[in-house]
Length: 274
Image (cartoon, rainbow, N blue to C red; front, side, top):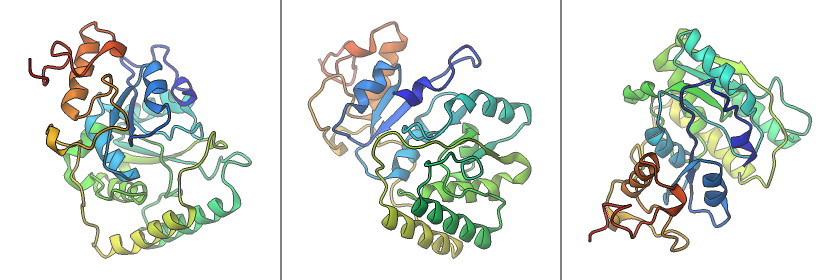
C-alpha cells in the first residue's frame, strides 16, 4: 500500500491512524491495508459518498486527511498541510490538483471534464474553489458538529457538495485551497467517466435549487446484526458490523494482535454470546 507508506510517520504528529472504508472488495485490499497498520471497516452500502459518510463519522483523532489509494495524491505533503491548518487556525483545506498536475496524470477527457465541472461550479456558487473534484481534504473533525456542513450525497457528487458546504457554512476566512502535485494513477480507475461526469454536472444544478436529499444516514450502520450484508467470505478476522469493528480496535489497543482477532471468540468480541 504505497499510499500509506507515502505519508511520513516520523513523529510529526502525536498519533497517526489510517482508516480504510472497504466496499466489500474481492481483492486483497483489507489484507494489505491491515499489514500496513491500517484499520479496515467493511461498508456494505455502495457509493463513493457513502464510504466517506461512514469514514468521516468513524475516523479517530481531531484532524482528518483524505486521499485516494491510487498514489495520485502527494502523501509527503500531509504534515505541511496539517501544520497550515493548525498554525493558521483554519477549519478546512481542499487541495487543488489542476495547477500542479504532472504530465499524464489527467488524460485529455478527464482534464476537460474537470474543467467543465469546476467552471460550472464557480459560475453557480462563486465560492472561490479552483478544483471542484479534488478528493484530498484536510480538516478538523469538529466541523461536523454543525450538521449543515455534513454532505448528504452517496455518490461521486459528495466531493463537490462537501466543498460547497464548507465554504458556505465555515466561511472563506476559516477555509483555504492549496495547490499540490497530482500524479499518474497506479492501477485501474474505477470511475465511470461519462456516467459520473454527467451525475456531477446535474448535481451542481439540482443542489443550487435546494433539491439535495439524504438517502442513507450519516455514519456507519447501527450495531444490528440483522441489518448487515454478509462479507464476500467467512473470514473470522473481518468485523461484520460497527460494534465488532470497535471491539477489534479495543483488542488491538489492549495489547492484542489485530491479526489474531476472531469474531467468534467471546473474549475478543463481547458481542458474541457465550
